[in-house]
Image (cartoon, rainbow, N blue to C red; front, side, top):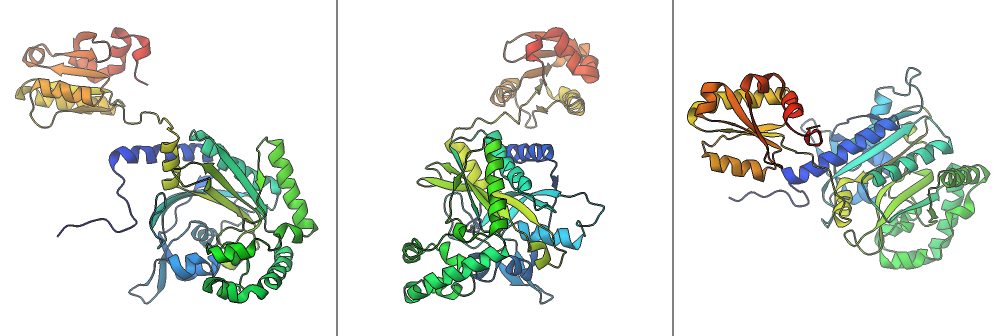
Length: 435
């Protein structure tokens, strides 16, 4: 029987994993600059964690979640997104307590699962990087999160980015808009898709997010949420816009943006890129917004929150399409060549000593001839080779060669074991030193 990976999943092989590691470590360093700390939550949660927070009319809940009953007859789900699990952890572990300075800032990385039609950059198991900040209603925090998202993508060397923002207002504004939207859509009820008919009176904003072409034509004439913002909501959104301008972050207002999950309010945003690798026109690669009320939904106190998420697969597709050059992360510093079986112990000792001293080192494990070993050293782009043969073994020496220049010196093995960095400094040019 021939086994294959499940549909909608991918094997991330070593060469590709290097890119993933670079993205993850770059994100970690940047998030640390903004004082966000890592949080890790379970890959599966109670089904109710996601159905309660995402909304029972959302596509995520009604069509896409991988849910199951476990052996204890509990209804569980693989996580379809990161925010709900983080909020559950925030509440359960009382991170809202006075001992935790506000805002509480966290980030996460990991696998998410949605039963969707697999396509380029969109898999059934996909990976997200996200941030969440709890405890502040201030527009300044909205702008910090947006600026951090832009900063992160620019750190990855991406260009042709566009920031789109909108406001969903507070509860009063949403309630007023909700009724206006129902009044507009009701006369078109028979023309709506089956999904939108179900959603119309439960959450009419869902209809605005419909992918059905008939629905999209109908909602073109729908009222705008921006016309229903009350004074507090307008003030919040105006402050966000002014702060973005003060940071020289250009933006476009998209009044039709509603986001895909029910828990958003006030500021929402998407960072988009223009790349054919993701489709025609601008495509979203990072999105988020404010979700005041979500902490209460999961049993916590009144606690505002805001965050964003970005998909790793789509990000890497975009980086490849824009020919982003990644640093060499797997540099081989030294390849140790042994000539003759009798040198095996010494070459192994040298490799281990170099590794203990912080050098990436390797040797032959296939009992190959010297020519084949040197060929491997070239293929692996080793900066230096250390060679020991019968003569060197007797003299307790080794030949150290700088591969780029061909410069070679003979040194005592004890010196290599003691301080290889000193050998490089003494015998090779400064610009060839290993960092």
